[in-house]
Image 1: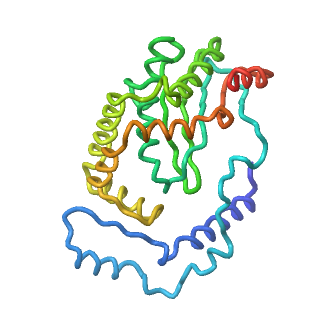
Image 2: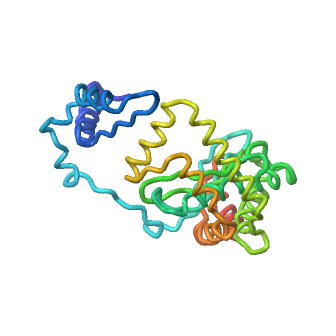
Image 3: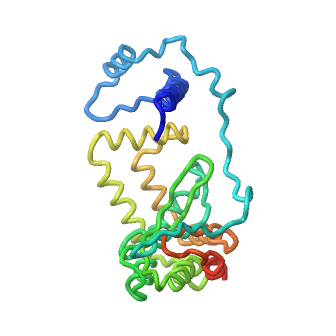
Length: 273
């Protein structure tokens, strides 16, 4: 339980931080829909004080990005939270490319092929063939200086070792020449990605968010059609190159929740075998 003073200090610190970053020179406004550009610009000028002298000039002095370094710190690859649960919750993954990297489109397609839907390899192998879980999926979480390519699943506790090995095997297989992605898999993933994005862009707010996010984080804007063209240009060789670069044995890591007290070393051996 916090004291009143601790609460007051917390809110004061956060309010100062909010005002520190949220100044007129940091605002990006995106407008889409049935609008007239000249009228919209007048309204923005009226309601947003961009002519204010309040500049965020001290931002660089007080704050600097601490870039992700996968070689920094310890080499621990397995993180277990011991908890009495009916099934184990597991995430196995690898560091990926930063948000602005040109290989991200291929990486997104790779995540769909590997575990993005019910036609994916993880779903077919780990769930359907081996019956190790009910739900399983792969995804990419993108950040400014790095990303995470991961596969998450709910696993029967008694079969956790088998599941770790099965998920790891799918990663290694898709990065090998033997398990290389096929043209059919790639085309299916392209259709899925483009279809999902098209459905999500049915309202003006979503389009504004799509364009504004690109400008804020990458200072580069691609329309939906331009993005679709980029997706269509991805080849099987592009997917294979990304898989080989990402899925390196020495970079794999795992987080696990379940009743596994004292088993960290044992489970790590399965992961790194």
